Length: 371
Image (cartoon, rainbow, N blue to C red; front, side):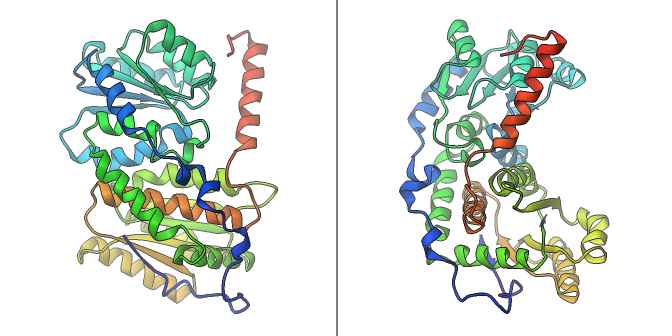
């Protein structure tokens, strides 16, 4: 995956380089400092597969616990002879009933992923899925989910406690369901490592490009539009949205991101982007291969140039494990820089946690069991 910044010019008042003093060292960034325990992933996967030979995977979790795997699934798993995957990220009774009808207990494996092990909606969903062969990923601290797993004798894999879920794409929460789906973890992790090596560092291109985006924001470009010209890679829309919003939406500041699948987005959102308020900048993800899909993207980008909208191009070739790993790495580093250059802490999500507390209190008032 390569970048083209020809159409993301520096703003006229931009200083030549971004401030080096805000760039962290690798030891300050948990998702770069820490390495995944791949052996543990494979060991726990083997334990889980000793319970059942699954035709279906039910992957239960919220937010960063499963958003990376959603993208891996959309980009790779869907195109292979792998178990069918059902995502449970809701307590919508109609959806839960459908999952149970389509994924029988004798041929399905339930994979529960939760860093805290305390998310109320997940615990409620899990209660409705009791009886399935189950494996759990959660951090190694006391929680209702961990206690349940230990009581039931379910295989347990530790979630790294110092890595936020949205940045855990190179760690156990994403690696376990990916491995169970037939993904080559070595190639995927190589892609992530290559991406970190190429884009992390104060002298790296992406640091300066992130600075350009920040300066364009100060000039009134408030919404980052991300059209993804790939049916598979567009599955990362939830991850990209979560990364940007949770890492930069703090202290009354930060970015708003709008992710859409191209070329379908040309038939609705391009009207707003090109004909509405002039507050957009963009990252286009396009195929390197010449053909109809690229031509559609090129037509859209020509319209952006005519409208004076700045944009960056990400160009991909074959979509395989390494490409997907590099794509995840790009958004990790871009998000990290986007927060730091705005003077915001990239980790933590206080407003998300506050909303969970409100939901917990509502349950208590209604007489529902709370964790």
